[in-house]
Length: 157
Image (cartoon, rainbow, N blue to C red; front, side, top):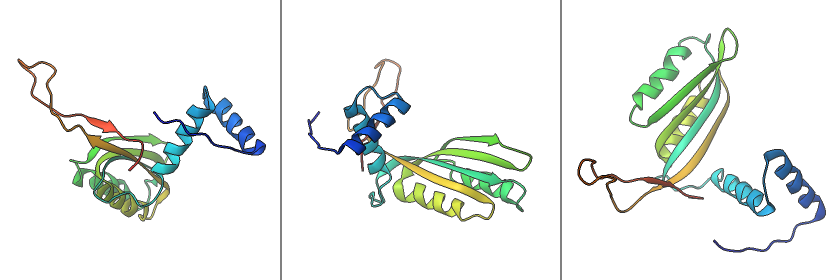
């Protein structure tokens, strides 16, 4: 881990302390690391072919013609990238949908952007989480388990 010293004015330090109190942060260093990670992950310019997980959230008006069928079909069309989906009913016609996808930045982003253009979708948001695959395959039990690789979270693209 590298040590970096920064100077911030009193107003920004107060805002940082308020953020720590609201989020349960234990130190300014921890809070700053969290904020830097979040800021870097929302920056445009991630390499299109970089592997990632994407968390796609939106509000879906199920009463809009065929939307209740098109949204799930879009996930089924990408069954190899869709990890999980949660749909939370809000009222008689609206749900909040959260989908976790994996793939390249380009694939996940293009799906999310196309989804957000659908009439009847509101409050669309995409969060990209950069990952890297371990280089060396390994087995936890050499006698019975197949060799496999793990994904590792990265702090930025």
